[in-house]
Image 1 (cartoon, helix red, strand yellow):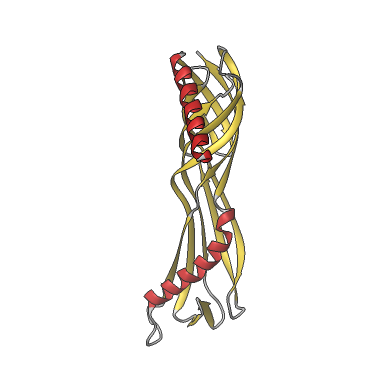
Image 2 (image 1 turned 90 degrees about the vertical axis):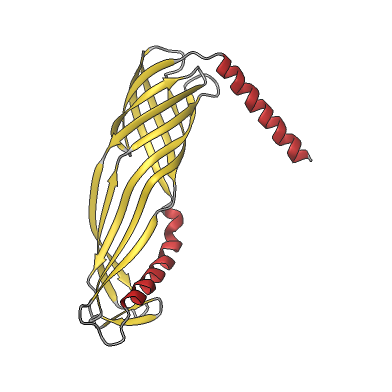
Amino acid sequence: MKNLIKKIAIATFITLSMSQAMAQSSLSFGIQPIVGSRGVGADLIFGVNEYFKFRLGATQLNYNYQTTHQYTDANQNSYNFDVNMNIKGGNHLLLDVHPFAGKFKITTGLYSMNNGFNASANPTGSSIVFNGTTYTINDVQKVQADIEWKNRKPYIGLGFDGYVGNSGLFFASDFGVIVGAPTNKVTITCSANPTPGFDCAQANRDAQAEFDQEFTKNKKYLKYYPVIQIGIGYKF
């Protein structure tokens, strides 16, 4: 009962605050070039009043990084995976809430994501193990793993800007995270002349199950993408 009363009180407070803020509506418009961990771009700013404003923007980034990662299977066979990482910019729609009608803001919204890792290896030796099943190198010629962050993901962050209560130039900053776990897929290239009884589809399922186990262990570290950016804008 106490929790219910508390929730009703909070909802009432928020509703009254928003109603008061909307009643004081003073529409404004601005533009803000930005640079940061999502690349270089710009925001169009639509101010509702001194408490709320929307930002619609996009950034451009095309970062590529290549490295080599060693993987060891259950039989202690080691393989070198060629890893390629791609990080790109995208568009976003954000809501800035200025709770004190000042420079401090709390931001939420959506970011489009188009990032990914892909790793490929040509197994060496005589065999490779997936999900407890041993396959010969004659049957499994190549393994590729893909991890991707796609579509729109929610964002939450804090920041400061001088948009509220001023006209002309202002400085802005944002610090937050985009939240959303990536997807993963493993693909095996099977031999054109496999060993009798070899099942390529089953080998792919076993490889996916093996990778899923490793992916689950590290998924919590891949769930958050940091956003750090600054900008200099102009309010008309």
